[in-house]
Length: 141
Image (cartoon, rainbow, N blue to C red; front, side):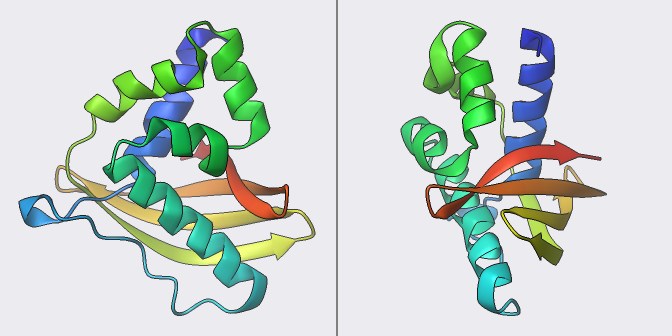
């Protein structure tokens, strides 16, 4: 994966997967409508939002992003945390809603509606179960 595609992936992931409320207070995606393993996936997305909003590069690299993503960032030079630092500085206010989640074994797909600068977009986020927890692997539009 080239450094540009990593940047695009992470920029899209962080931009579409995180939200800050008016006035700078953090808000997380609702997980209440999901049950069982789908709830665990929704919680992982909510945790990702929280960590992006708080600009917690270390938590993002260790807890939220799949090993394939962190490995690609490390190979691109500078490491995962350094790559995320620049991406996190570019995030402004966004809004995110988890529309649906499908779980199949150690893989999950979440349909996410995001609003950024007044524009809505529906994306698909894939997550993988690693080390007992769900981690974000990709985001596509």
